[in-house]
Length: 444
Image (tube, rainbow, N blue to C red; front, side, top):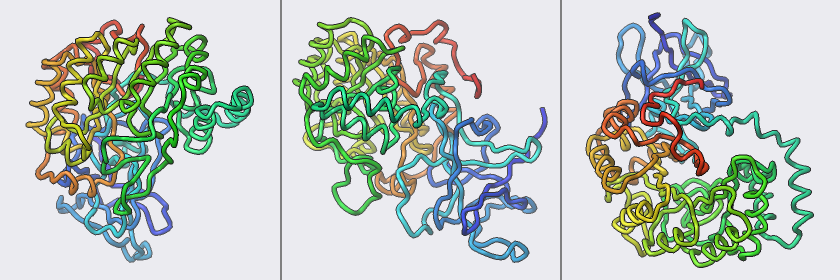
């Protein structure tokens, strides 16, 4: 096998990105910089993007000495200007294995709510590599499927057809202004479509993407829903989609709302009405699962699957990030058990962060929960947040064993557990060969 030389990727003051010939790539597990292992790197997936980490010095390994080095300026022969770290923003279906190596403590601003992934340049192959692993075969979410030129007339047509439906108006903004792929799916009549329902939440997540309670964090990336849709509004969105869309899924619990579990009665009434009109398609519920009795009601109403959001299966890390209001971590665990007992396909929306998700104590607790609750899938979702903000907020120390090693150990210990990134239709809950389907090739 050809040995790969992976150089650090940096940017100048203007944002121009290039490889640094004197610096080898480093990544970070938590706040610990180290060299990436070979199985932690893959070629940059098609559809991914690079962006700078503003005013943040990059870190890498000096090619001559092998020592870790922080760069603040370019060499004088290159102009001597300031240098910035670079991150990859990966296309969906890939979980990062390392954070970009950078001097986060020296940055002057809170970073945008994006998922930061280490990136380097392979000299021999002349292409970018990222610290990542593929966790889902689904290719429906590739950017090439979301052409806004085709989308806009479809949005206008649907809004005209339902001029009184506030939810369709909300989703038109999500599709066109926030570029939500799920909202776009609704207007394209395909795949998974969203049903935001709750303007309120009983958690105060540190990096909430729809509402910040105080100006001590980064700006939210979208505005939160301001109303509770009626049963009629929900059905006008969901029923046509369930009836005619390819691989139809409708999902409560989206980025532009609080938590739908606080609107359980409305949702149960809507789901019953949907199922009166069609048995086709899958109804999914994304939630913090903070009210166990609500999970029983949702299952009884006809919800097919549930995806429970967790940043950690350890209570102290969970509480530090979610900052629950009026519920306990034990309630979430109870809900997960109830969901599976009620026959719901049960998933974790596991908000992955190298250095937390791959700790030995975290892995031990995660294995216990999977076994005791009978969890079907773990969606390995990259947590979008300023790495330093998150690290400080949850009070973490040390580092983990590596995300790829963590995934390998999970699958080895419990072969039936499925990894993923997206919700699935009922017909594909248990695809052929899922016990052996790991690791996935970078390109499928």
